[in-house]
Length: 93
Image (spheres, rainbow, N blue to C red):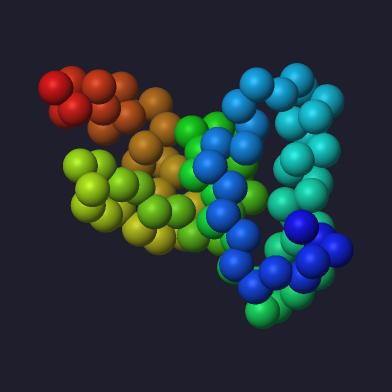
């Protein structure tokens, strides 16, 4: 991805099935991608808090709708360890 210098990169749960060492490398790659070009958009679909921590913006989706959108400082406190996150499975039923 870095060599191709793409303008839009989409990753759907890229951390699935990788070990801790590889996960740390993945975080570094995302950070390098973000810092290497101002004209690049990176979309990462993930449930991992460590990936959310490097995000510029977080979009929370539910039932095909945007439920929340904002900076990590705005969104993370609302979704990590709160009833909103803990009861997500019940809302899907």
